[in-house]
Image (cartoon, rainbow, N blue to C red; front, side):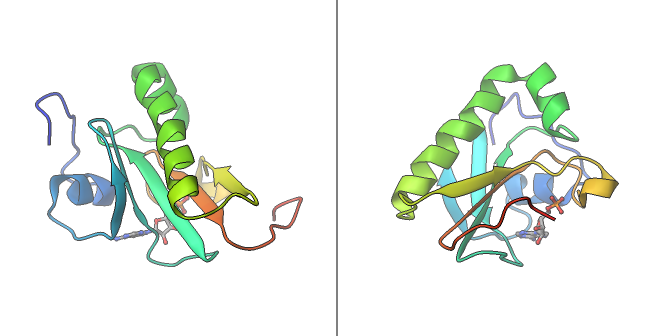
Length: 120
Ligand code: AMP
């Protein structure tokens, strides 16, 4: 953890950042952490999160725009290390109707199979 991280004691992903809950970490930087989703929806399903707590992507982009960009840098590095040269999908579910269930901003990186469009 770095000194300027802002964590929420009640947040599952903040507990992963703090090391209080284990995760299968695949990539990390000073501002981001990426780990495999517990309930994968594709052969590669990784969550890329800011270390600091923001409830959704818009709040992150407003509060720490550089970190928002770092999520995309991390996704590109992970896509390369996971061999996703054929393509992959990045998703931010935002709000309950979009099935956001963890209110700490996170990017889903999905790949390793053909994707359908439009998504459900
Ligand atoms: P969302 O529904 O967009 O909020 O995504 C939250 C994701 O977090 C879901 O895909 C869950 O499967 C995943 N998830 C929940 N708890 C954990 C955990 N402890 N480790 C890894 N992934 C998790």
